[in-house]
Length: 75
Image (tube, rainbow, N blue to C red):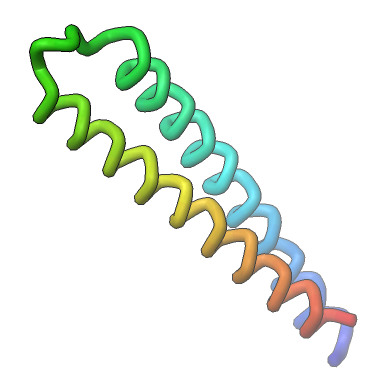
C-alpha cells in the first residue's frame, strides 16, 4: 500500500477513534442515568436504559473491530 492511501486510512482511523470516544461518553451518561436517575418504580424505563447501554457497548466494540481491521490493512 502506498503512503497516500496509508495516510487517508490513518485519517479515517483518527475519525473513528473520535467517534468511539463520543459513543463511550454517551454510554457512560446512559449508565449513570440508568443507575442513578431512574426511580425503582419505573422498571420499564430502567430496562430501556439498560438495553441502550448494551447497544452502545456493542457499537463501541464494533468500532474497535473496524479500527483494528483498518490498522491491519495499513501494515
